[in-house]
Image 1 (tube, rainbow, N blue to C red):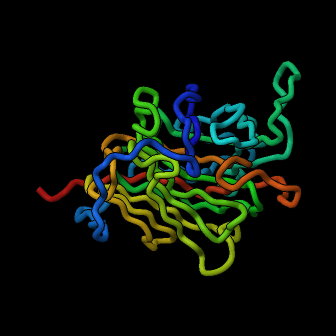
Image 2: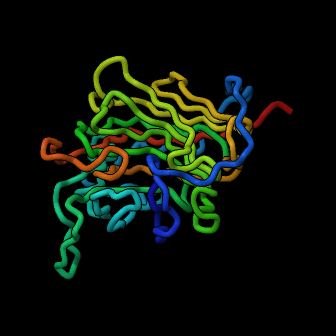
Length: 293
């Protein structure tokens, strides 16, 4: 989900997107043999988890989450991301709700945004940042329709200094509302960004990701990364398997957002209904447990 990030303005950082051409690739070719992920022998140990157990209508916990205010995105999205509770709230049943509405945002002076939708984007920059580990969320995606673009992703915490894609980006899941049975997972980094990203998809055998909750997991060690859906691993990348610099050697932070429109799935036609909701049951971060002496 290539978009500007978090509390500070990063509009100049992101000039590329998943379906656009990325940075110039290095001449070195990646390995051709299958890449493998070796389970860490010491396992994982919990670091942080949010179960969103607050009262109905309350804000996400600001000890861990930054609720962004973004008048527009970098990927031609049509949503104005607000910190209003109608766009992001805890529902009283253990879920964080990100809600996209078909409306123009009106600021405190009465000026209406030109964006035809409001929505929400949250991040943990400066609050929950982790190098290596297991990042997981249990999510029910929206009902769908073309132009609905939710994502659960990670961004390198040096983005403000290094810029994108040098900071690295991990898309744990992106979803096209027009193709509701499939999620896309990606790596973006120097030499493999935008349209040159490394990515794969995971399709449900039937139904839609909006029908029920599913668990989306990203596991990251010094030697490899892998993606899982409901415990099934489907994609692995290693430093030897990319053409360009491996950018996954420093802490990353978590982003959750519900975009509307843009280059990934196009703009919503009249047949795409609103509101659209993305429900998050929990988000957890674990680290590599200490190894044997």
